[in-house]
Length: 195
Image (cartoon, rainbow, N blue to C red; front, side):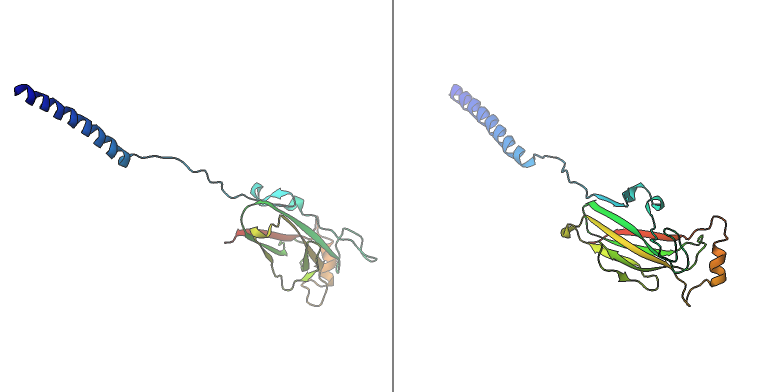
């Protein structure tokens, strides 16, 4: 009988070891863990103005070229009272993955010899001229879903010589006497992501 108890004890021990092994394996499935990284691309924000990225700096003066076609009384590419001209802002949005708004503001530079420069209007992609009064900003919303990748905004400017002009005829003539005098406009463009 002692050997029978011994055999039962050995079988019980083997059964206990096998049971513990299966219990550990069962619980291990519930306490296992995994880890990993997700790779999510960040939206591109690389807009260019006149072939200059807005990431490269804030001054695009070298790419801003005013055009004054002239007329029978004023030579081309110079400015005089009543002269009209324009400059183009060529936007490339192809490297922007979000919707955004742009705002273009213009003002006479404090360093300008001519204080009577005004923006009279603008056109978008050679469309109709939209008049501007009182120095209004030029703004528009570009929705990503509209798939607009480029835009040209032409801004029309003029040397105002009307009765509401700041400079009188003597001041107009004096502007030509200033050493290295230039007619200067400040142009600021801001881009803001919209949701």
